[in-house]
Image (tube, rainbow, N blue to C red; front, top):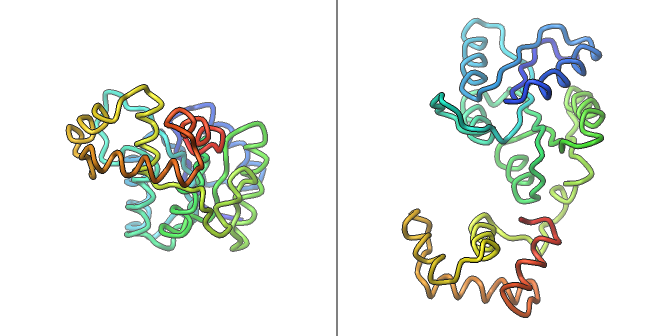
Length: 221
């Protein structure tokens, strides 16, 4: 079993649950942190000292507080660690269940397991730790489609953000203005219209309201 593990989650209760699991698995050297920056610094220091961590278990979402952070969330942390410490095994333990994100983290940043928080979360996390130790990929059943061939009904981050603005009641003109303000590209009204038309055809939606409903039902937003 893993000898040295670091867990990163901003909720103490979640960290305690993970610590209990690791203790049951006879992992005695465990470090718990609540900030991504702390996780990065601990991992870097351990590597420099010649006693590197074997495994990182991290959430993706971290609430902002008074403390400025270089790594705002778990995905930022994973990307940085993948560049500097590619041998470090990573398990994601998150409520986030977007198939596109799961697939990207696994294929581009070599995440070894993706576990969804929920009623069976800690049970699945135990299974994931065992699987990763045995060099096996583990993905929760809820997001298992991430390992399958890409679906025609999947959309990218830009599309998701676009549809979210629709669901918030913004008009196409308002979305265009908002995208320009936030420097999100493409932001022109014609581009917004073109992309929404494409999405309506892709999802066989009758109108914008129908499109939002379909995408929500599929769990994509």
